Image (tube, rainbow, N blue to C red; front, top):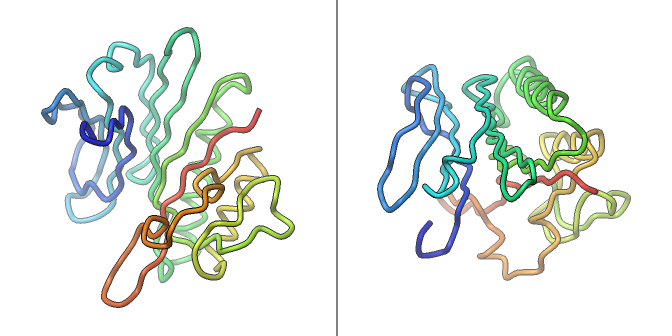
Length: 192
């Protein structure tokens, strides 16, 4: 994070039990939440200088966590999310989207929101019909889980910001396993 000059980072699959904040070295602090040490868990890492700006920490579940910070008079809500994988039950997926929706509904309209999440879905390449919420630089074809991301962005007046930047495919890919390369991690920002 220090080398890349990243001040705030959303983490998923932390697999740590509990609800804590701990210093992780190099001037960073991790706020995390998890209920099982074998699966899930989410966190937000902040550069130490921003820790004093934290006003509120919300732990919706081991898949959704948010921090509210005030930075130079601006309220910024950082949400970390970890959606269930493609093979999971629909009920588990609906629970995740409901929790994320509840967190969004609790944030006043005038405040800034950034969601950094492993959505375990493909929003796809191209944006025909969805220009108001995403760019055309995704990866692969859209699947059901990716459609859920796009639908959520529309309902919440957000943009899938990391689809707006043209980059070489190896810089767009966020997940590699065996011969598979795809993008399942997205950053959503409240528009306006």
